[in-house]
Picture 1 (cartoon, one colour):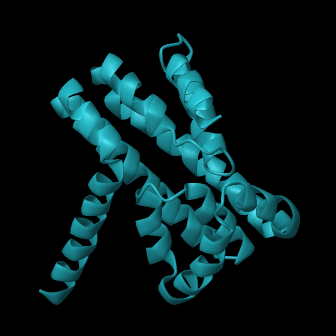
Picture 2 (cartoon, helix red, strand yellow):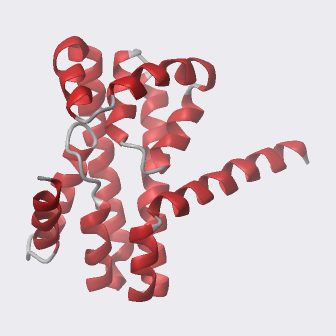
Length: 192
């Protein structure tokens, strides 16, 4: 099933309405869809490298708006819809492990996890279920999703098709390294 969804998304990336498909996929991925929008973002940026920033912004804003939908699912319907979604995506254990992290680190955990390929729907639904402050959630979502999608699009714009395989195969490594550098930079500035 995932392979057919992947193939469908790749076909939509070449469609004349690709930007609208990217917005829709970015929105639903934030709350229940299993495949990240990077699958469409990558070929779209390679096909139109001068529009890399616009494409990344559409992906970011749609993902953040979809995140509000995921937050609402967690806030208003966790025991029914939220648990069904997390169960179907095999994220129930991660949901329970996420609560102590949110309690201890707050917005930082959302910022960091929102930049990584960890399913964003886990973050959005959990934040709603834990009644995490909506303004803090909004701030963390805009920053983390923006950094993630802009970083991928910028790499593709700068290095073109040769970086595609690297990004596709090592997306988790790339985003994790970026997060480590970012957090390390904050700590270095704080210590200086």
